[in-house]
Length: 413
Image 1 (cartoon, rainbow, N blue to C red):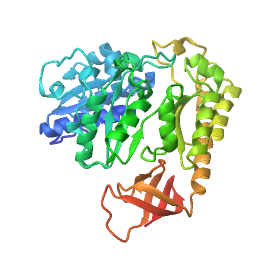
Image 2 (cartoon, one colour; image 1 turned 135 degrees about the vertical axis):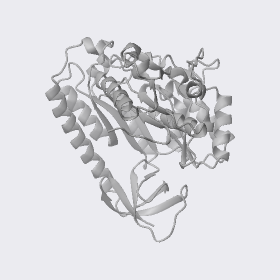
Image 3 (cartoon, rainbow, N blue to C red; image 1 turned 45 degrees about the vertical axis):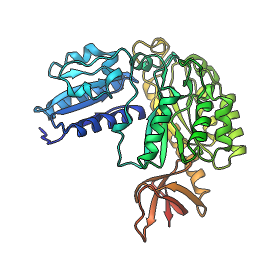
Image 4 (tube, helix red, strand yellow; image 1 turned 90 degrees about the horizontal axis):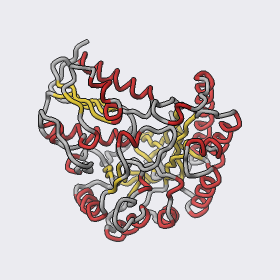
């Protein structure tokens, strides 16, 4: 069915950083009052992700014949020739410049020598929290990952520029800032003084006493510096939720993935932080069915979820990505991977439910976003059971948990 629309649209595939970039692109088009374009922001994390990206572009070409179809993102960056064959697309925008207004305003290809961090002028003002990208790219070459080839080597936003952006975000009325990047904990490696992430956070909290809520996106366990560790232990303005780029809980598989942490390191991080800050919770990314993974290897991952009490597990079935070393390793049968994914999902859901049930009857703090969905400080979903009075979005709430429904706390104010 052909669709017609009097406004532009951005179709997003892939990671949280892609989602953030898609919002920036959407706001660029809104500001220009441009109703002529459909932008597809692609993903290349697996072969399946590339295939879905291609399908999304083909569908957009079919559904919106009267629009310019523009393609960007990691899949079109890494596999440009496959997307070029879709002849009706208007242009492919380089990943380096996909959040630059000129990439969509000008009909010509817009080029820059290096990546420019997205302007905060295009942040969504309808939200209670602001995403701030301070890092891009990755210098590591995990055996399963193609993303460094789509986003380039690691670069950092200088601290002086971070300060300018934080000041502007706070003056715009946002109540929470989320710092994000491709490999956030590698922040500073390319800068002259090589500041660590923990160091710049300490300086931010000192310079901005009105910065009352700060979150971090995914963290590499191998790169948590002493300052960052201390902040998670003692700084109440740093939200008590740590999302770890875990990938596996088995040391042999981690070695074959070319990760730089082991299960003992992760256990130590979680146990120490929990000792100092009882309310802290953990999230993790987990790849199931990595080449050569045995039942014992898989069980070690499951056990680590339990031992660390990880309440928010993102589970990914391994899918070989052409061009990565892992694609050449002995593969696990797809049926077995699917079985393990289901077991991992059921197990992690049970862990989450156990943790949540212990909270019934207690009071939880959260930044109010909407009646149907907000997030507690330690990143559990919240829904208002009853709302006797109108609550302004962005208000701080402390409410009693009365029950759990569909993975959300039901609270009563």
